Length: 134
Image 1 (spheres, helix red, strand yellow):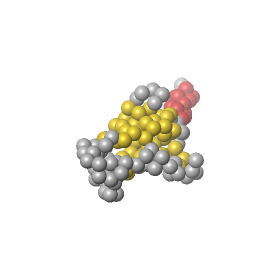
Image 2: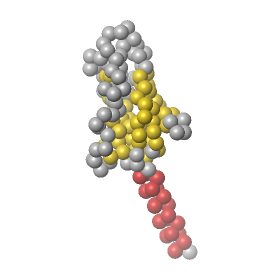
Image 3: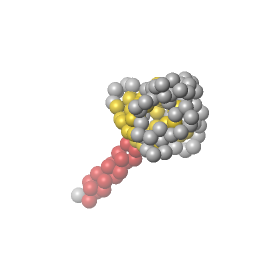
Image 4: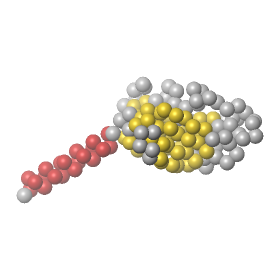
């Protein structure tokens, strides 16, 4: 009986470790055209394969984080009153990856310039949990 209990405990421990290793994270800082942080912006990460949405808000430093998302391809939408909505598409989240997807958002009144997806997003800051860039 103890052997069965030990095997069951070991199986649960291994399953927990496997689950933890197939997730990744997306985080970033949202700023306006002047470089000031945008607080309270709604950030939505959408898994393009499943359609599942996760939503968070930027904090008082403009920072947001999705610390544990299933691997897949994501679109990240940024919305805040007084600013144009922005979507960064095609963020590929691999096992144990930590993507940085910050962005400058343009005001609705046209002050400042919108940045294109190529200028705004994760370019060059993608790192796996082990620190390797890809």
